[in-house]
Length: 454
Image (cartoon, rainbow, N blue to C red):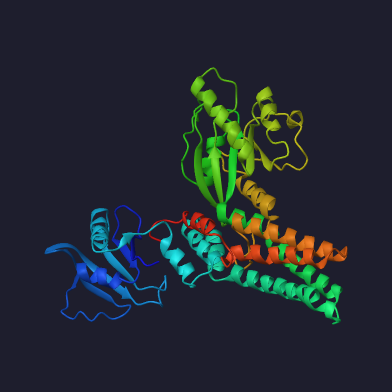
C-alpha cells in the first residue's frame, strides 16, 4: 500500500488509444518526471485532461492526454494518474517502462480494485462484481453485475448480520445477567426472529442456481451419431457457419465451442464428434471427448435422425441422458420418417422436439424448452437480487447451517453457551462476503482472477 503501482489498463493490440494508469503517493511525482504539457502552465487542475508529450530524457516517446486525480475522490482513494497514449503495443509499453524507471512498480492482478476495497471505497462483494462486469458476455450478466456493484448484496448481508447480532445480544444477556435475578428474554422472540433471518438466507441461497447461470451461462453439449445435424444445429443457434458441415460421416473430430446469447442467457455450446465405434484412432479420441463433455454438461442436447432407423448407437446415446438435464431433438423432419421413437425408451421428463435444421423449423421451440428448463419460462429481471458467485453461495449455506443449528438447540433447551457459539459463527462467516471477516490468503486468491490493469 506504500508503493505507487502502474499498469496498462487497455487490451493488448491495435486500437485508437491505450491507457497507462498509476495509483499511490508518488503517482503525480512520477508523471511529472516524464510528461511535459504543451502549455507552459504546470499548475495542473484536478480531473482535467491536459495535452502534451511523454519524454524519455530529450526524446519524445508519444503525444498524449493525461489526467491527474487527487485522492480520496478516486477509484482507489489514492492519488491517481491516467495517461492516454496512442494505441498499439509499442507506445503503451514504452510509457509503462518509463513509469517503472521513475519509481512505480508493476501492479499485481486486480491491485487497483484491491486498494479500492482496502481503502473502504468498495466492499468485497462489490469488488468481485467488478470482474464479473468485465467478463460479462450477455446483457443479463452485465445487469446482474451492475446490481451487485451498486451494493444490493452488500445491503442485504448487512441487514441480515445486524439481525443476527441482535440475536447474539439477547443470548449474551441471558448468559451474563439472568443469574443475577434479572428477567430472562423470551425464547419465542429469539426463535421467531431467527426463523425470519433463516428465511432471508434461504431466499438468497435459492437464487444462486439462476444467478450462476446468468453469470457463467449454461454449459451445453450436443451429442449424436455422425451426420445427424450436430454441426448444423451449432451453426443455426450461433447464426454463423462456425462448424464444417458435410455429408461425410466423422467430419467433426474435435470439440468445437461457441458462446451464444439466448434471450440474455449465455449458452456455452460444445459440438462434439459423432458417437460411434471407429477404427480411426483420431476419430475415436474425438468420440471419447464427446463422452467426457456429456458427463460434465449442465444440459445435453441429443440429436437423432428421423430419416434413419434406430440403431444400437442411438440407444447408447440415450443411456448418457439418464438423470441428466437433457433435450431430445428429432432432426430431418422434412424427410421420410423411418425412426421409431418407441425404441428409445425416453424418460417422461425429457422434452422431445421435432426439427428440420436445414429448413430452420423447430429451433424457436428448442430455445423455449431451454429457457423453460432452467427458468420455468421466465428469466428473472436484473432488478432481482441474485447470488451469482459460488463463493458467496457456499458461505450463505454455512451460515444457514450454523443458524439452524442454534435454533434447533434453543428449542431443545441445549445450554445457552452452545447456542451463542453457532450464532456467532453464522454472523462471522457472513462477513466473508463483504470482506469484514476474511483471511489474507482468501483475499489474494479472489483478486488473482482480475486482469492486471484493474
